[in-house]
Every structure is written in structure tokens, then in C-alpha cells.
Amino acid sequence: MSDSIVIVLSCGTDNPNRATRAFFFAATAKKEGKNVSVFLLDEGVYLAKEGIAQHVKAATGDSLDDHLSYCQEYDIPILVCTPCAVARKITEADLIAGAKFAKGADLIDLACKGSVISL
Image (cartoon, rainbow, N blue to C red; front, side, top):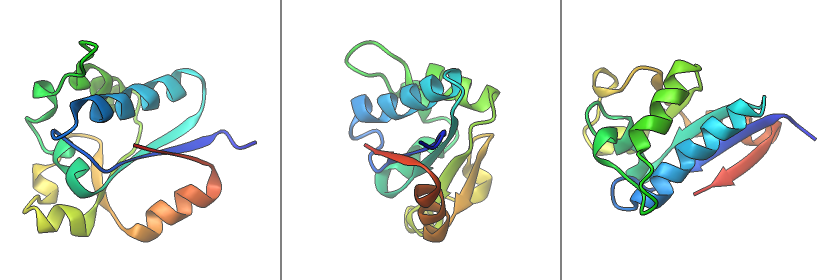
């Protein structure tokens, strides 16, 4: 069994529960010693834009910003689908620390190396 996990998130502020859970699971995986990456696509790319995360909370009261901060502190890669971001007029200069543009081939590569959680 692989110790690598990629968490794929396709929703953003439109589904604060799933958005928050993705980063919660990323932080949990890191705490468990796993190699983890987060791949944002579709509406999920908005979460990598500076100033958005602090406004997102799950119904449980969890703050996306808290989990995201952990991911940033522990250098969990946050990969942002390039065409998804470009279509939403998000540039690399708009991205939070630790986030970078990535291609579909990067997601496929990560998926082939480990487990995938899709939210």
C-alpha cells in the first residue's frame, strides 16, 4: 500500500463543508505521516485565491483557513488546475503561499502513485 494520497477538490465556496473537509483530510494525512497533495479543479480553484479561505466554514464550525494554514505550514503541495483558474481569471500572482498552477497530467501522475480522495 502506498503512503501517497492526492485529495482532489472540485467545489469551492459553493460547498463549504466539502471544501473544509478536503483540507482537514490533507492535514490529517500529513499528521499520519503520509505524502499528501491537494489538487484543486473547477470551482475549487477559488480556494487558492488570496483572501477567500478565511470566509469558509463547515457546518461543524471548522474553519477552512485553520486547516489550510496547517497545510501551508507543513508544505503540503496545493496544485491548482491551470485551465480552470485561467477560465476564472485567476492568475498565479493571485494564489496563496504554497499554491501553484498544475496540469491534468500532474493529477494523473499523482493518482497513479497513490490513493485518491475526491470531494
